[in-house]
Length: 325
Image 1: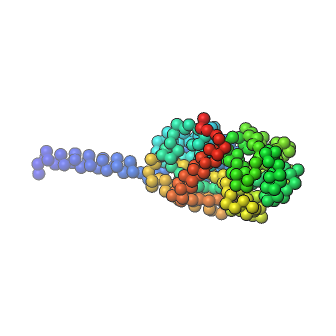
Image 2: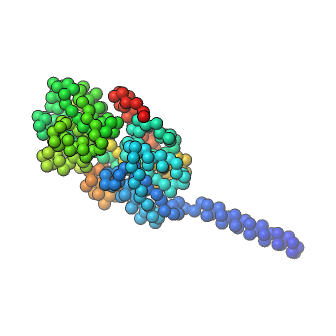
Image 3: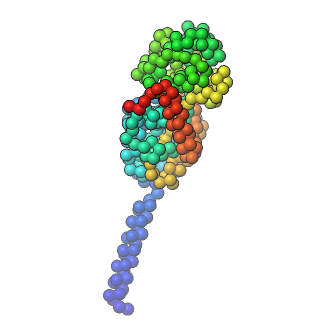
């Protein structure tokens, strides 16, 4: 045997083995390290609750730490921008609210909401309720419509701010029910509900989480839920559509997103786990106790839903004369 050729062969084999080892490392199963979970709103709310439940469960399933980071601001756009700029490798994800489908029509964003983020799974619906102050002499949506039509423009409704889901839900109701009301925006849900309890406004469209203790305690009166179907949290309360405004539905929701260009195998693996998690009995119990309805959609369903939500909110925002700032 030629010693020179033998050494060359051995060297070639070493290079090949080294290359194969590097390739194997490059294709190591995901996830192989800790994951950053951005949450678009402040601690303590429904988005935060949902994101933290998912982070804990995903960490247990994947055997990797998931570090939760709240990045509130600009209606969720701050966290979404952070996600859009992250490396698309699956190690940064985001739990966001339905505000992510509102901001494209309200703000001049530094990212493309259709290309720079990927909708992974619709995790939960946060059902809303139409609530009135007890001084308003109505017990049903039909009675409220008649009461409001007799006082065009006189009734005040509160929201957590201009262009928020609460504002748009009330605007959609006014358009579909044919009633005119005056909008009073607040800096957040808490002051909005406080003034409703105080009787300074007559109506609000707010979450079950933020209002339940008050209408169950008699400080407010719940007339109907805002979504397309009844919520398990309040099974005896009808929808607005059932109550005299056919076709009405406005959902506040929370979903998970990944950066644009994230490999599809990572997107689908994440989606499948989220769907399983939100439908596990212990997770369902936790979510429903917080006034949240578990969903867990497919990736394709959430993409379609997200696009529909952007279009619906754009139409509503244009109808009330708001422009991107």
